[in-house]
Image 1: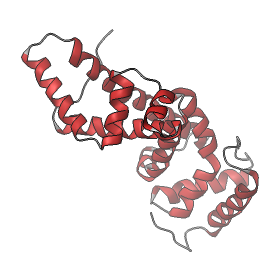
Image 2 (image 1 turned 90 degrees about the vertical axis):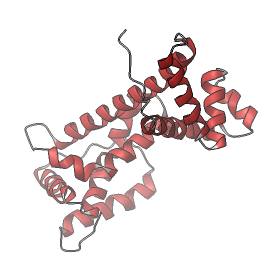
Image 3 (image 1 turned 120 degrees about the horizontal axis):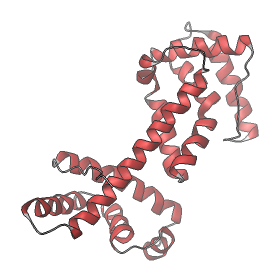
Length: 219
């Protein structure tokens, strides 16, 4: 992203002001942007600048909406680490996503929450299909397709860093809880959650490269 001093000084100044306040009041308080005409004009200006990758504009939108977006995503995924990652991803991709945004009667924040909710649901689908791949590799009949899937899963697991692979095996195969894994690996529970999250993403990428990405089955 780029930052331009001539983009909109009001956008940059408001972002600086909120950041200064943020340092004193803490992160993730539920902030609702003011609905005054001046505030809405500033948001509209930030949206237009962020569409072009303006760094200060994206920063302002993050400061205004990240708390509510995080809370909405967390209510879907029920995992603080995943919610943080998804929230960060949404804002990292915001300039591209804004190309599809068209102002309407609903406030910008409502559109952004829908984007976050869709990203959270996609994340849950990814998690579910990875878990299904593990189960199906064991439960399916020993035909050629099942054998190929099992080999692809083994190859993908082998490509993981050792700590990530160990967490996945202990979590999905041995059925241990994150707390139990933390004790066994002499790591914090937060570290185990982070390793599991990164491992799922890497595992899915490896399966995609192998042409064996799992798909959700109809109930």
